[in-house]
Length: 248
Length: 278
Image (tube, rainbow over all chains, first blue to last red; front, side):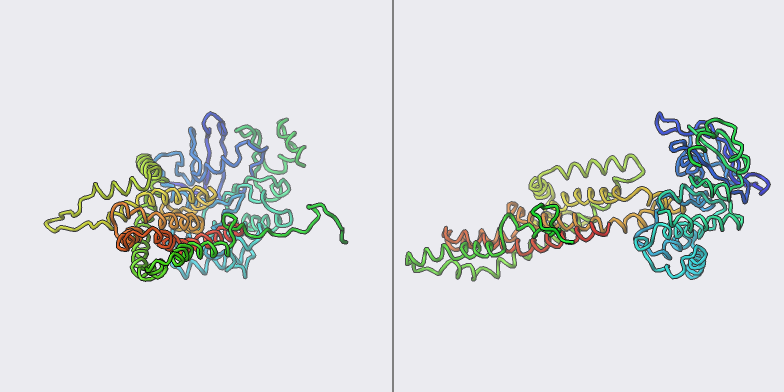
């Protein structure tokens, strides 16, 4: 693969996706450069989550092109496992493995999938749990942790695979208000370290603070996009304005 | 603050006593058992017949009947083991990505799940040869072995459904999380999905075992020397005295009850425990 960091790390061109007769994405194009943090916002059912789930091939697309580091995702011969080693994902419902401890959740994929040495993987996992401020919770099972703590374990679990891009699918939507902050802080730390992040979020203040670029989607298309300052202060499209007036 | 009221909603919650079995209390069962055992004997004692009391006759036969019962248990263990192994494979076949594998597994499961156990047993008994020749070596197929095969078929089909149901009952997020971490499908199944399913499968699996144990007596119809066959033979040897029927068959019933009831109680406890956890 002849991808260079001068090209977009993730590049979507005219992506179409439908579930049966329901069209969810109607020609979406966007580019994400290495180190960029982009936020996708928009009303429910506008295709935001579907959009990022297509990037790591959890959903397939019917038409268009998705390149991740130059590799075409919309390809029947795609090696999905190779793609997913490069793309980490965090879900709204955390989806931790309930029969494994926090530490096991984090170190299992590196050991089983990347065939890392167990001792090394454990050391990395402990460091990651410390990084998401969960030192001392290594032996806890997901059921014993709060939503915010579980979500931070989920972030550590994704980071343990050393991905190049991280996808965040409304990761604070299921959380109690008092634990939202700790998760957002963790993501902010990541963004400041230069991790390429694609976020679907309803946290406008957060998006404004961390995003390099904001995309507003409605009914399967990108209605408007721009850097946070212009986007929030000077939205052009009436749909964007209406959405922002409801939220802010 | 305390209120005095007759309104049920205002009264503190009190858990109901566990539902007694079919309205029976444990002591009822003891009384019935005693009546079954001693009733006929008493009647005969009063009639002044110079024979051993039925209870004494039964005592003589108890060792043999217990042997037969242990044979029933052996059949149940082996049929369960075989059925579980085959059923797990079939259940995994039902969630296979290959349409053909899924279809065949689904058909086998539904076919054997909706077949009377006795018919399957007859099939195994009379369609399998009594021995097979493999490379010049003849391997005998004794009746008890054919009974195990016959009984393992419905077990297989039911286990297949238990496996499929347990896998389906897990939230799809577990699959997605595993996929997004680049686990292969096989790894996802064996490391993440199935370990979580074991807990969910245990209660219905034990239920099935109970049912299978009680069904092992069907093997008597096809001539396997298990407890029912032996009971019949013992009664015949005693000259078919009608007053022996109740104690003998009552004894067999008690054996099965003593074995299966604790399993049922344990299953209920497990179910409750898992309901709390989930």
